[in-house]
Image (tube, rainbow, N blue to C red; front, top):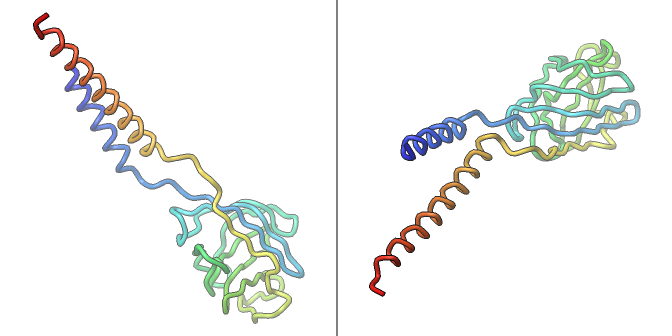
Amino acid sequence: MRIALFKAALAATVALASSQVAAAEYVFDFTNSGHTASGSLTTATAAPSLVTGITGTADGQAITGLSSFASADNQLFATTPFFDFSGLSFLANGVAYNVYGSGGLGYLFTSTEYPSGSAPDTAADLLSTNRVTLRSSVPEPATWAMMLMGFGAIGAAVRRRTRTASIKGSLLPA
């Protein structure tokens, strides 16, 4: 019975450990001379990774989702300026925003300013605030399962040692 229970627990742990990595969530804050945007980005894994979701506000309007404006590839990188030249594009109140990196600096512009999606690297578009930070997250279920299995194995080893010692002790002559 114990062996069957152990095998079932081991199989469940292996199944959980092989599960897909959980998404990473980042908090962002962008500001330049004419625009502000803040909220959170969701990626499939830790950066560098494809941004799969976005929430927050841009110029006081709710961000409604990602966009392909300005041929954005929506890739997030771990270091500043956090985006490549194609950048990250999103929509707020029907206006497309693009945040991109060029020459180690970050820029932000909108579809109302540059409808073609091609913007020059101007001082007006330069980001004065460009923060993207990883939000702390709860460990994945597989991590919890492995931890609990480890505690169980330690407990079983201690219990077995204690039982073996007491059995051997009782067989000794008085």
